[in-house]
Length: 108
Image (cartoon, rainbow, N blue to C red; front, top):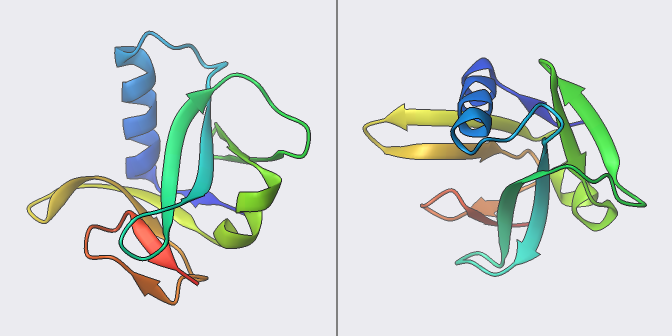
């Protein structure tokens, strides 16, 4: 399962509004090769649920995860920070053995 914090939900709702997207636009979370540590997180709005997608819902937000990314993301919490150390979405991933200083890259 993937969860989101209240702060992340607020930012997702705000971004949907800013980008003119409706509630039918879900959050797609995926993992791609690259970054300092070998794997990178990717977030996007998506209306389509593809074959093999796992769909989670937390705090009224639907989260889509493709089959390949699911193994890397199980148990992850999506948070949002706007503090002095940087602004943006952050992933608290219990599966990551190492993370990059930017928080966007990790390895297993």
